Image (tube, rainbow, N blue to C red; front, side, top):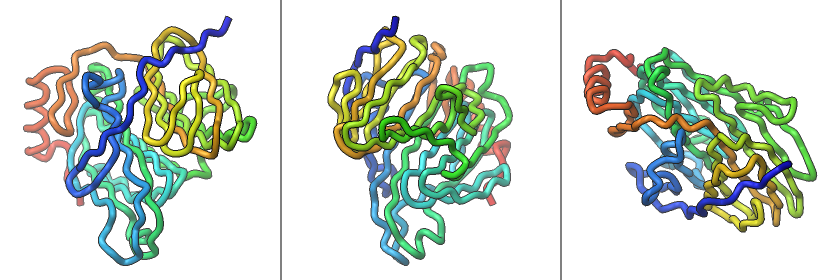
Length: 285
C-alpha cells in the first residue's frame, strides 16, 4: 500500500549576499542547518546579463573538501575550471557535478560567450555531504549538457533524470553520494506521481510557477522538506513552472564545517586549511 509523505516544513528562501552576488537561500535557514545529507542550497537568478557589461556572476577560485557541489544550470551558460585540469562550459538544462572529496580548487562564472551575447542566467548550487569513509577519495568532475540528460514526459510534465533512477531510466551522473536528482518542468493541470524510498530524505524546491505537492501549495522560491513517513509524492501542476527534486540517504555523522570545508572534527578542518595553503589541493591555472 502506498503512503504519501507528510510535509515537515514549507521554507521560504531568504535573501542573501555572497560577495557581490544576490541569491535566494532556503538552506541552511534557522534551526534547519542541514537536511542530511544536504548542507547548502543557493538559487541565483533569474538575472539578466546585458551583453558586454559586467558579469552578473563571478565566483573566483576557491577550495573545497569533504563533500560534493552540484550546479544545475536552468538558463544561461556557466564556465567551470578546476585544479584537476577540468575546463568546461555548460549551457541551460545541463549540470556540473563536482565531487570535491579530499580537495579541489575551482571557479565558476558566466562564460565569455554568454557575457558577450547576454541573456538570462538562472542556476542552483547544492552542497551534498559525504560520509567520513569517502571524504578523502580522489576528486572527480562530471559535466553534462542538456541533450545528455534523459527526459521522460508524463501528463505534460517533463522529468529530467540527472542522477539516480526514474522507472527504467538512469541519469548520467555517477554520484558518489548516491543522490537522486530530477529537474521537473510542469505545465498547467498536469499530475505526476513519484516513488521515493521512505528511508531517504527528500526536498523539493519550486523555482517558479505554482503546484501542489501531496496537497500542500507551493510557489516561487519555496522549499518543501518531508517527513520519512511514506514512499511517494504527488505533484499537481497549477500552471507552468520548474521544480528541483533531490533525495538521499542520511549519513547521521557529526558535521564540522568552516567555509568551504566540511569534515567530522575540528582537527580535520585545520588539516584541510593547512593542505590548501600548502597547495595539496592543486593550483588553479
